Figure 1 (cartoon, rainbow, N blue to C red):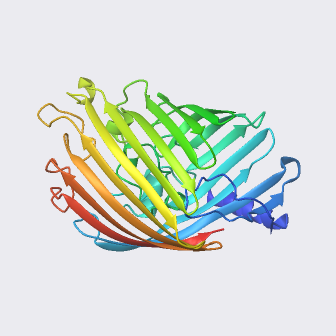
Figure 2 (tube, rainbow, N blue to C red):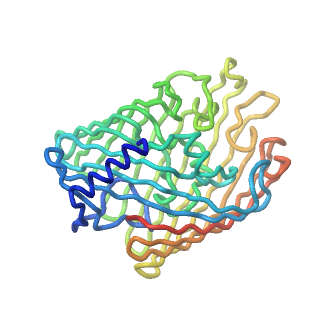
Figure 3 (cartoon, rainbow, N blue to C red):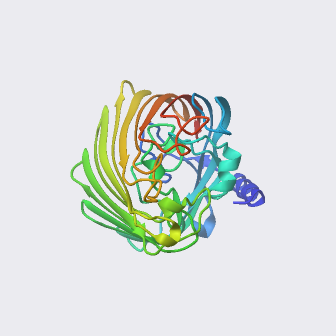
Length: 382
């Protein structure tokens, strides 16, 4: 949302005498925990539009790392989120608008400052969509949508860890398109026709099926892939990933004080001479998330990942990770403290790689096989 319109929105909220109302945390944006949204979101009466909610996040981070890539830094401080969320959550016509700046730190990738990240990915309006909900069980969404794919969400505050993982690097974050949602008892289905890795070419089809077994257990299957080859690429649209097919199987157990979620991920990039892929490339990955709440305010979250790829440089296989045939693994620990809307969390991560291709790996010469990071993120979810 442009700054002028954002200012008008905030001024309008003040004119309507915005006040916090007692309510459950809003379902959007989704938070996997341990961070929780403000249970008393600000709302105002917008007349014929109904009740409008205004929430947001402001956070900053500090990062220290070794074995940096060219152009990256050994230490830095940056804004990780400065975003506002405006939404209507009931009635036939609903909407969601997310506006502001952000960074997208991820394991094994050079850190791009928030200003450049916002400019080179999804802009200052990363998510915005209209939702038609004729019933509680059926809805249609159109616009800039959060991805259905993967076990992690796009923005740092949404996940148990500050950085997204190695397997997240294979999935899209935001796509433009249309999505249909349907719920029948314990089964929830979603399907989307979209532009994949933000390519503006509407040739991706994505779908999810979630079975809520009981209050503590759920199982999700995700399938997503391109319907036609696309030679367009940008920072937000990597050529290899935008021509891939992705499948995830995710199991989640969540019953206080534990959350445990193992999952497997498979990606395939077909051979395509026109794109320079002389051999079909594949990646197979396993991830495990776990967290334990020691107190209502303090939680320790961890993540383990392992990923392998196939192919060779000699056969011009696509580079899915650190060169054709490479493998990688990661360990992450994130202690988190939250008191009401304030949160602070630290993070320690390690990435290891093997069978790398020189020029496609880590470190100043892009031949390195490991990287360690320490981060601190603090802010408010208002």
